[in-house]
Length: 618
Image (tube, rainbow, N blue to C red):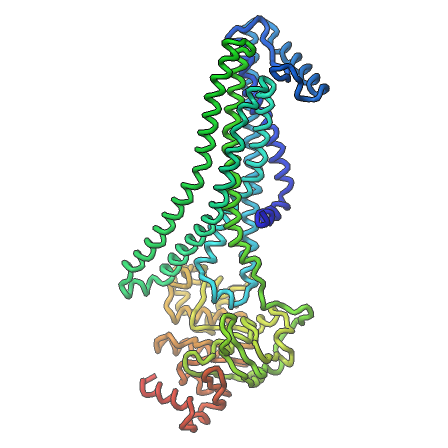
């Protein structure tokens, strides 16, 4: 229940709507009871049971009061006044009054039922929205290491499917746990007022129901957790297939992917059927026990009417109406615990994200920076990922002065990308420190640090938005003139104006409507518009053809002007003019110098890499 109470914390902002819903629920329950209770005088009139049919007072069949004397007296007085109003006049007038009262009662019941449902839906959807928004916002606070260890589909499933399941628990409390008990109390009061013996006899079913409910609830919580994980697996396969559809088609793997997806959906199908079997046992079991008691009640009550004459036929029928009106809310309550258990299992998965504490955060005394003035220094920097103790970077030290262009080269897996990822604090060093104008990065506010840095990577990230919005990403109310100016500097303007709607053309998810070179030039235009003093290029041209590479390289050179630049390069021909080149091998800087200097070292790794590329015509 700890998880469930945590869900209810999200209800607090909506307490006014909760109170309104509860108020309307009370009126709904009372009018629902009244609509059934009115059947007694209606049947008495139709059956002509005496000249003046009367409403039953609140006494047991044995004549013993079960309520305080003052309350019994007050109820009896109201009943007498009601009888006098309804039953004054001839039979046709009495019948008309009763029919009008029934009509008014049902109208009021349905109005209050609608209002109660609307306000409850407002609370439900508001809670779901708030949870989803909070999880989404928390995701942005989590470090890159979190996303390295999590499947994208699993995260999407938690924010969509799991949060939807939580909705059931909100309605379970504020609808079933309030409306149904109120309904039970109202109809139980009606039943007791007619016959205490029959009422007690009818309630023997409850202990059996509660035992079944408790057992089934424990099973459902376990199964619900497994079910949500299986849905996450389906979402993961779906996400991977859609994002990699080009590779799937290129390798003719459609049948393989279909089989993989069908396998996951079949697993989900079997699990959900198993869960449905367990979940649906509670309702028919409760109903069958109710029918058993109902049949016995009809027989016993029939004897009271036909042989003992202690009940009128209209009263017995009214009692049966009241008792059988108890069954639906009892059945609903039998499923409440199950729904709470299912929701709690889903909530555990959602709260697991919220409980993940980001390890890249602002220090309490972090300082704000408004620019880059002198230098960036890596001092004895080492790093390993959370899930491994193997060092990716080992005791690296170097200094980059303002305006300097530093290239980082090395074989795959040498640690090049990790080295530059430490600068915007996507990760923190596990040893040593990085200094920005003499200040440890961990003592600088993250937002102000990242404002100073622009990043262009091989893996281009664009959004399913217009060209204009992609270039101006992160900038509000940016004039079109500045966007166009940045696009021209990035060699992107000419192809943009040829698009169907020019700068207002939607480029598709991840920019799929554009070529690789066009996407890269838009990402460079985006970096130019941000105009940061520090730029990071992570193999920005490695996947482009020669023509696109020339255009992108020209744009990159413009972007480098008057900026401090880190370039991770696969093609060594693109970094000839770098002020300094760092050569990484197994997480260590093994060479450092200019292009010509490094080439003179015939035994050095840089010379070997260069000759290898030259032989391959790169």
